[in-house]
Length: 284
Image 1 (tube, rainbow, N blue to C red):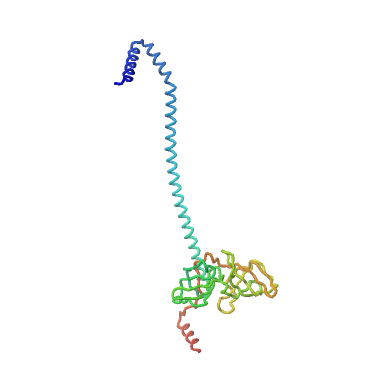
Image 2: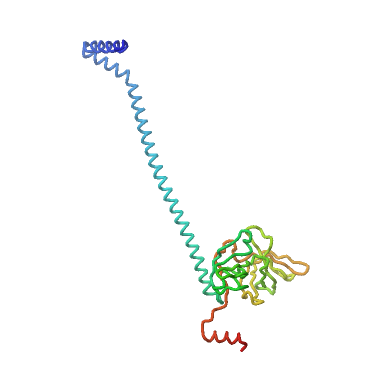
């Protein structure tokens, strides 16, 4: 045994013998003095233990709340995704109902087509649809939407067709301003602000009384486009030395265009119609 340990043991034995040989009153005084001496340490230790316990409880409580928050956030994110999906379905359903209503109420025969291809470099000029020759689609047939005129068929193939949009300068349409005697030619503009294509209505009277907001409609002249199809609304009018020109905001939202309708000849459904068509083709 080490000397230090032996000395400590001897001191403890001597102290114990001394304490046991004292009177009961003396032992109590010693105990009282001892407890008085260590009481601050005991209280301090108890306080520290209480604080430590409270801290542990708080940490555990925080972890529980953190877990609850995480679960609530995940559930909220899931609900948001579901709401966004439902809104998308609602918008698609509304669009479909509008399309079906348009197809039922339009005074001529049309077939629905989806836009399947659109090039960024020709975004405002052409689109490709999923209808072609086998669906009765031919060159120069009008293409419409529930909002108004979209353009015309340019190059049909067996299953698809290219559509020249109204916002292309090559698509020229005989147009009139509703409520006025003014008429002219509408075409797309080569240079338009990105994201906001406009049309140009030319050959108007130089002193025409044209105001913003007036409707621009097709005249039906030439037989290519039906009459009274909405093209857009007047934005500005500029008189010129010979003719006036108006900037027109298209009625169709070409940025969000997804479904269109092609005006095709009505299929022959009766023997009388077939006979009449045959007679016309033979010159009778």
